[in-house]
Length: 355
Image (cartoon, rainbow, N blue to C red; front, side, top):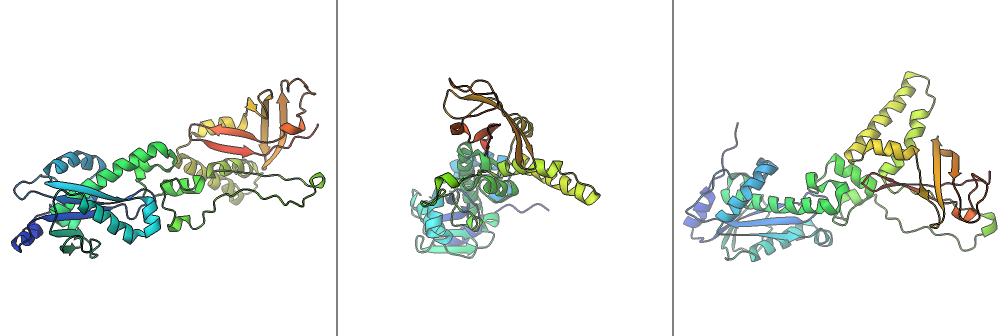
């Protein structure tokens, strides 16, 4: 059954009660993990109407985009108030919504004396003299539906633009809201610069603040090996050979190999990585540069059970070339693999003996 079109009945009641300018108010982005919170404000002319306007949530993204210009031109005046992700963190969501609403009202070319807003909370305060609270006003009241379309499309455009700068989190599709791909990207990459750091999904996030080496260590008798996997993809790619190649014997054990492989594939695809590219570069690390520019090594690494069992160096090693397979001590450190265009880096600690 189709949802009835929104009406102007409530506006008409307010006009009849003596309110001259009635503004519709709707917010968008309150439940998002990233990006701004926005409040739309719209004042419609009394004598004209645009057909097809609905609550933004009832329209597809393409339909909202088509509707946006028509609604904007139809409005007597409209404005969008914004509270940034930093303001959401600093103020809390309720205060941030009040701030965005005040900015929206201040952006109008007229001063409304009545407002209609969705829900049962008056987040406008005394910014507007009279506020009508109606649950589902964005669905039932035309002026609020118009405000919702304007706010939603404006925010969607901002998040699509942010996706150009932060491609891993797929803001072009999820617009900063929770979803499986967004959660997987947070696990793999951590938060972006536009994520709200005060939200619950950040509870277990611990930023890396460096490695502290004890000052009293005896350098001649100690050795520090640091293994760093900067992304979820890196950790999974590194661990998968162990799961796949372990000599399982029974059906249950075989499933223990199959299930993680399928899950890994799905997560890497959700992160929009090129699996063929990963497979190629994971097993063939050619022409990696280790040390200064004069040291060009081609390294073939074979991984078994998370241990590097073979590493060969081919070619000359500067002016003091040593026997094939021997690498000077100062150059025994990390090889880094760039996987595809998504900047997934797998850092592998390599220790090569004099053999």
